[in-house]
Amino acid sequence: MEVDIRRTGWPQRAGCRWVAYLVLWTLTVLCCLFASVHTVVASVGALLGCALAASLPLIFATLFEAAYGRRAKADVPVICCPCLGSAVALIGAFVLLESSGLVVGELSRVDVDSVKTLCSRYAGVARDRLPRTVCIQQAFIKTDWEAGKLRCESNEGGRVECKAAFAAAPIFDGEALAAVGLPDEIWAWAVVRGRHVDANYRPDGQLCGYLAGPDQFDFYLGDFRLAVQRVIEKHALRLQHQVTEDVPTPADAAGPPTWSSGGEGSGRKGLQASLEDRPLLLAADPAEVTSQEQAWLLAAAILLCLCPCVGPVPLGCVFGYWCWARSDDQYSGRHLVSPDDLDSDF
Picture 1 (cartoon, helix red, strand yellow):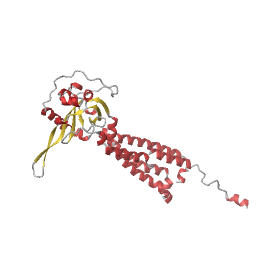
Picture 2 (spheres, helix red, strand yellow; picture 1 turned 135 degrees about the vertical axis):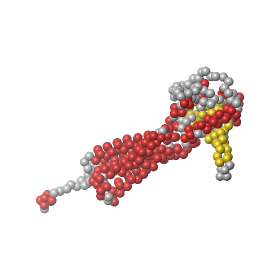
Picture 3 (cartoon, one colour; picture 1 turned 90 degrees about the vertical axis):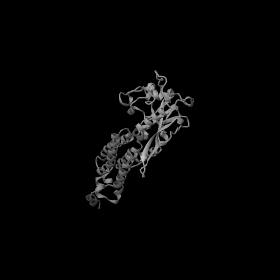
Picture 4 (tube, one colour; picture 1 turned 60 degrees about the vertical axis):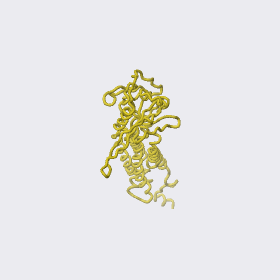
């Protein structure tokens, strides 16, 4: 190893390889963090993770040619550590892919003061423009008005069994308004995949959930809408008054809403939306359902950032130490003397 690091131009070559590795590492981390945005981003992140894992042995093999050719016992750490780092980088990239939903959900989170504000901003908006997670300061789910959509399956005996698989319940601005139960005060719908809607409020009274994002939400969107329609039909809900003015947007809101044309958002928008078109909120607190993703994110941070063989900062420190150590006098003050000079002394 000492023979390699003392070669002319080794610090420059090591610096160039470290910069290239830093760029590849950054692209890999970014693509893996935002993998849940689109399948293409997830595929690119997986490919970059494989490239990152393959780059470590190549970097060390081109910096330590003599050590790889000699394969002495003293060169074992230089040869084995990149292979270990390659495995760690590959595992870390795929672990980071698993935690992408947590990161994207937190970055796209919005907070609103009431369900009415939520309806005014997001009713009729195309799903690809909706924030993933939302927290509502004032909200109350009227669970005694819930209704479900049945899912029928045949058992082993050939008999058809139907069970409530999707449930929906209206959301009001407060418990008092929910007690009155006016259809005009229903501004959103809480939906779940299961038999009953769980009104899972946080200690401060907030109601948090998903407007878009989770695979089960998008995949079963039609079933959730049928459950909402079942609630409307069961309780004969009809709007009595047409709201003509939206509530003012809070100062801390993320800009004015943008309405799409066609498809889901082709009807009335905002507070003028019909009961069926008002926002669907998947009643699952992100802080609870993403507990496993939080663990994945912590593991990915340890593997990709703190591991000496993988993290750009630890790896740069190792290269910097070798560049500094190559300037030491390997002969400890002793110098080579020509045999002719020795003969003259005697």
